[in-house]
Image (cartoon, rainbow, N blue to C red; front, top):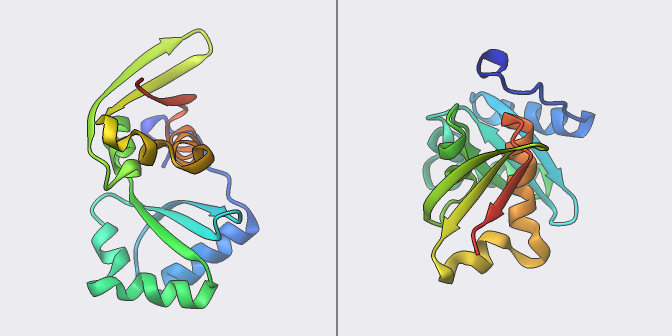
Length: 149
């Protein structure tokens, strides 16, 4: 993971346990895992090209994992390209454009979506945008992700 100047991701013991359980179901490389207790969900970031394998035919792997851990599961495909990774984080929302700026506080990304998708991109109480911010910071040291107004 350190090849592309990515920060070292620190995983909690719980996150490591979920990774072990998931890898017992399907042999995929998991780059990151975030447990969201508020949403009763676990988000896994799998290596590029492995999202389909992780999900399984008709969602069999995800459904098996959901049963085992009693939480919803979200799979995001990693990319070494920050723009592509951000797009993957927002799927199924279509991103029109992403711009990166260097600020004194660090790098930031502005994401442009259709007006009809802004609410979904942000999520109730900002939960979707906050998830993306957290993942992007953990993977690329990009300090902020904003939806263009």
